[in-house]
Image 1: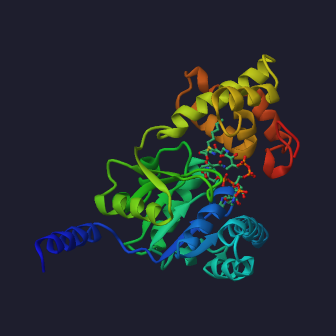
Image 2: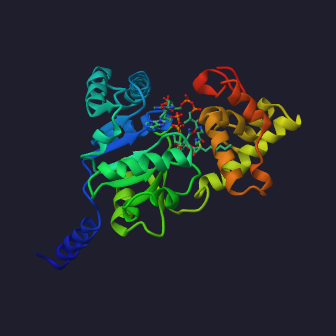
Image 3: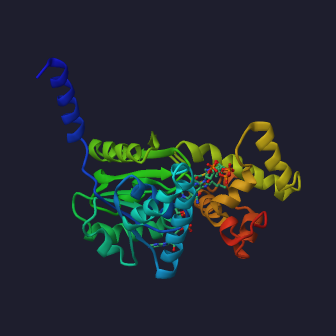
Length: 308
Ligand SMILES: CCCCCCCC(=O)CC(=O)SCCNC(=O)CCNC(=O)[C@H](O)C(C)(C)COP(=O)(O)OP(=O)(O)OC[C@H]1O[C@@H](n2cnc3c(N)ncnc32)[C@H](O)[C@@H]1OP(=O)(O)O
Ligand SMILES: NC(=O)C1=CN([C@@H]2O[C@H](COP(=O)(O)OP(=O)(O)OC[C@H]3O[C@@H](n4cnc5c(N)ncnc54)[C@H](O)[C@@H]3O)[C@@H](O)[C@H]2O)C=CC1
């Protein structure tokens, strides 16, 4: 073996030693984010189980994935559209669904949680999963705003716990924030980082601070846009046009709030208000509350700031 090959193979061996092999992934929550995470994982060749509360929701999750894959194959097989259906069947065959999270995680390598943005509910889930998952299984949360360390505390595997914060729509957005707590070990972090690369994403290293990198900046920006509407300073359309044409964003902040889901926006804001009650940025928004009370959650319900 030449010196170069020797060094290279030792380097690879060291890296491989620091990473766990991932074959099967369980995604808990099949909403906007969970369905996207399941889809891109299956596209990267992983076997995936998607868990949600009932079969009706899971059928919708599969329909979202199917619709997204239709858009993917339009580009991927532009020269030979006949290959598209076979590709979609192959990806769909890698995704199974269940309402039984305990059964799903009993033999999985990585659990990615993408349920409602509520610390109490997330903790309850992780504490239950911790009892049934293999000792080697890595846990990750896709939370937008909550503390990963706080969630990890309810498990006996804080060293195998990290954050994997994907962006919406998952099949299109390249970034994943990989969140490392003070307890996350190298093996877990490297495994999560490598998994993101295998998905074709660009992972960035984040500390477990509120909002990580992107939402630390995005939440104040989006909330100031909502407050402008509340004050009557500008219309949603003018704010969105302003930020698209004046600042080069692909979507304006109000369109983006509708796209993210107004319930998700409210949960993030309320969570931070509870944690930082004196911070004026996180004071509850009467307008956001009104939309959520009326079931106008944005694009996913057909109406929010805009009608779809
Ligand atoms: C108050 C506090 C709140 C804080 C909230 C924080 C929430 C979080 O924790 C973090 C987040 O995720 S924040 C959201 C981040 N996402 C964004 O900023 C998206 C911004 N929008 C875009 O990039 C484009 O409009 C976008 C890519 C979405 C769509 O592009 P266009 O506008 O050009 O529209 P299209 O022409 O329809 O699409 C362009 C190409 O993309 C393909 N596509 C879109 N959606 C897809 C999907 N779901 N699956 C597969 N393909 C998809 C579409 O087919 C099209 O392809 P081409 O025809 O080849 O161009
Ligand atoms: N919507 C967005 O743009 C983004 C959201 N996130 C985060 O991802 C997570 C999920 O958000 P979305 O997908 O938008 O929400 P969503 O409301 O679209 O989906 C959540 C899903 O979780 C299911 N669920 C709730 N409790 C459950 C439980 N105990 N077991 C199994 N399934 C359960 C619900 O039935 C629902 O289908 C949240 O933590 C959110 O903050 C992160 C990045 C972007």
